[in-house]
Amino acid sequence: MNAASAPAVRSGTEAVAARFVEARLAGRALSAYPGPAPVDMAMAYATQDAAIAAWPDRIVGWKLGRIPAPLDVRFGAGRLAGPVFSRNVWRAGPEPTAFGAILGGFTAVEAEYVLEIAERPTVRPGSGEPWDAESVAPYVAAVHIGIEIAGSPFSGINDHGPAVTASDFGNNAGLILGGSIANWRERLDDLTCRMEIDGVEIGKGGARSIPGGPLDSLAFLLNLLETRGRRLDAGQLISTGAATGVHRMEIGQSAVADFGDDGRIACCAVPAVGAVT
Image 1 (cartoon, rainbow, N blue to C red):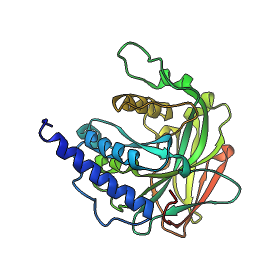
Image 2 (tube, helix red, strand yellow):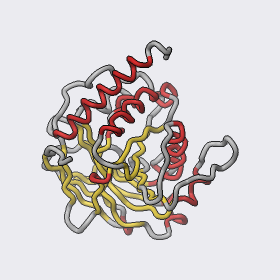
Image 3 (cartoon, rainbow, N blue to C red):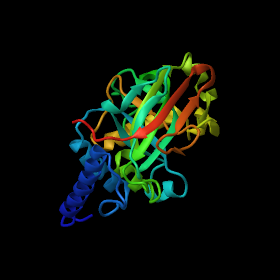
Image 4 (cartoon, one colour):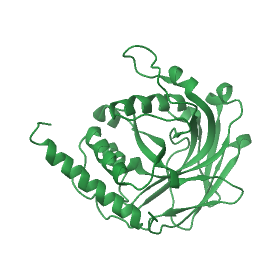
């Protein structure tokens, strides 16, 4: 990008971000991507950052999503990230958790392993070296079971490559947080789960389904946030990636993520309404 084109790109990303924010706040679908689509991850995260600045809530965590081959090579990353906001985190209870889905938009559920950060990671593994799964492990206070609510006003958010997906909060609409997993450090590699929608099993998987494992997701996030001038804080929640797949849902449907002895989380999709700001 040359200096002359930079203001135009910033203007374009800010306009797209504004359209996404307006649609999310209104609970209204977008029939098409609302402007020039990002051509790379830098442009995608510039759009995301503009939307974060305009969103009337604070970040309490991040979600990670996989970028499959060959797109991982083309876009220079194996994962993408998006923010999780405080008003879109729900504690799982005995009754299904209801979440808002935008009619005509994108809605999906993902069984996830969620890392709770113990303290702000500050000590890098070595001078100039990137974070890796081993170096991030001491910063994890707990691992929880969870369901990521994937959602966007644009129904085609996942159909046009990872840059488009990342640009709208990484296609995140919330996180349902379940209980913590006992002895997770010894058991992490062997954790398994399954997902049902309306009583029908639609996916099986576990921690091994996440490339490199959940801690590798955290390492990727830390490396990415450093390039964006952002940091993690103590208590933030990191949804590490879909363990059974990304499962589309419609308004009125119910889902259950079953983590075996570690618990179950039930949820249901209800019509989204305009947000209270």
